[in-house]
Structure formats: C-alpha cells, structure tokens
Image (cartoon, rainbow, N blue to C red):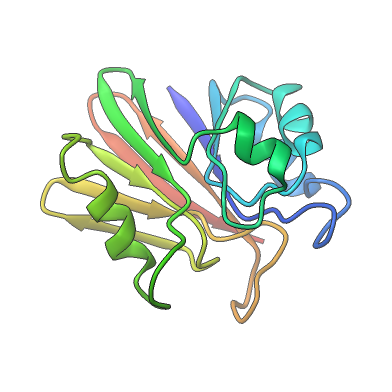
Length: 162
C-alpha cells in the first residue's frame, strides 16, 4: 500500500493549486492523508480526483472545514494503525510532543502531523513520527516537500523535496 502525505497547503493563500510535483507523485497512491491547514475544501476535491482522502482540520482551516473534519483521526492501513493530527496549540517548538501526547492511549504504529512546516521522520520507541513539511509554504526551509508511506510488512516513510 502506498500513501501520499501532505500538510499545510494553505490554499489559496500560498498557492492556487496543488503543485504539479505532488499531483504527479500521488497519481498512483492508494490513499492520501492531509494533516491539516488545507484552508479550502477545493484541496480535498483536487486530491480526491487521484485517490481517497483522509484529512484532519488545522488551526487555520475555515469554519466549514472545522465542522466537517476531525481534529484527530486513526486510520487502519494494511494492519497498521496510523494516527493523524495537525499538532497546533500550546508552546512554539512543541508540535512533535503535542502529536505524541495526543495518541499516547491509542497504540498507534505511526503518527502523522503538520503545523510546523518542518519535514521530520524519527522513531519514538516503536512509533514512527512523520511530518511531511509543506508543498506550498516552505517558510525558512530550503525546499517544498511532501511525504510517501509504503506499507507492506512494515511502514517505510520518505520525504520528497522539490
């Protein structure tokens, strides 16, 4: 199973459309996960043309998205439990800790989060922590980015920079 991971698209403020690089990479995935701050329902529609989409709301999402999307989501993917959260709230620089705390009772195998726009892959114990960065708002990062998860007998994560 191949999963496309994206977060913090902030559309249409940061971009009018999802970048071509992302659309090309996601055309063959089985699922797309958006970790919040879509800002506009058009993002979901554009991604759904490629694959089913699971998304959580972020702190910048408009009220209609906040009413439709959960703040936290657990997804079963090929027998692995993936937790998804935006990661906002509280002190700056603590996004990863907030994401971990949100799933401490859920026995997840992987936590996908956004908010910081900083790409990140690490392990905390047995749990894979994954932030794809942002494909439309790199802030102080050198490149835009998105992520891919490959799930077979284990979860493999990679960040793609462009």
